[in-house]
Length: 342
Image (tube, rainbow, N blue to C red):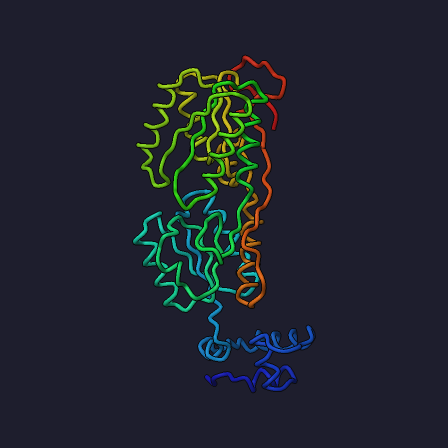
């Protein structure tokens, strides 16, 4: 079978070889009509450009690396999905690395990604102390993570979200509220949620009680920690969990202990990933704009790769989703897990 060349595409499209090359590499000023003609000819001939030659010509691989702590987590799984789609829409291929919150694994993945000559990185992992981040000489964008001063960060408004959650519980009559949050020194989002919780409770002259767990805490250990929460605070009437997985676990434990939700105990989570909302639709939560965070992170990365100015920090708004685990405002409900506001 004859090996197809640029000349074959050019002849069928009725343009020059140079024009075909410019269309393939998206260089120079091209009309949409010309682009359509060349792409139609390539499709008709089933012509595939030489990727290696393109990379040598453009000095780019069109590869983007994504590092996340765990795609099994609904928030990071959904974030990764939107990142991949936004990058695909811009013509990039993606290498996804799941670090499982292991420093050594993240360091190895980071080295491998750089070895593949990626054009840029989007980082959502937790280990900001890795030496590679301090010296990486390529465009990077972080999501909810501070890596170094010149790396842009895209985050949701974690302080406002935690304030919204805590005030929602207080407005509905809660007096003995406990906040559970996942600790990690590089995750400013959890720190901001804890700060907001402390501030709101102080403003209302209420005791601020916090139970902490590590991100990579084993499920059995996490469950035992939450069991102790109920043992040590049987009068708890409100829980603000800083992620939906913990909120769902606490909801299950509370019901097993005989708490009526929301009559005796109100619970609100954080994240609002679609998978969690489908599995626990009754859960009240603070919804992060996950798709918008991903889309904006990709835009920032594209701008950095193009040498354009990018802001050091971008904060996006969040929303409260009320559900069956919160009372209706003004309600004195005494039922068990009644259907309330959606």
